[in-house]
Image 1 (cartoon, rainbow, N blue to C red):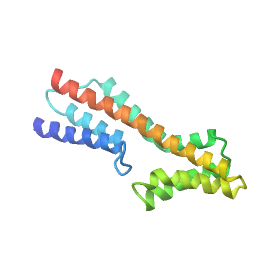
Image 2: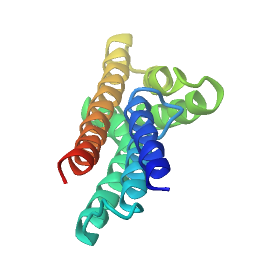
Image 3: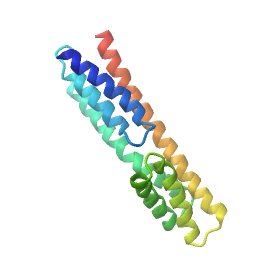
Image 4: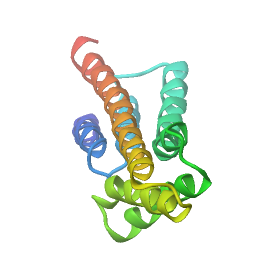
Length: 160
């Protein structure tokens, strides 16, 4: 049974890394599930503190993934309509145009929101670009977190 859990955990780890780039897959939660499967074996155990810490990190990163594009849009000087446009664009893109809608949706939403508030196209594009940079930053954070969990998975599997 341990071999099955290890193989499934490894598959989840690969899926977690892929999910950092593919919006349809929840990257860090899949990676965390892979750690839990390895922990469920008889020979490979993690401490409770380790599992709780990575569970909290996973939840934080998962939540930040939706907040960061909105935050960067606001930091770029977007008004309320630009920020709301970014959030609405994210939701619409996620629901109606996966997987690319999660990338393009906040950008288009921020631009439309800023244009509807009377800002010129340069300011609107700046807000949209900031939203896109937020997406890139969020993706980078997910890759780092999932990569670290994968490293712990492999280290525990092959060194212990």
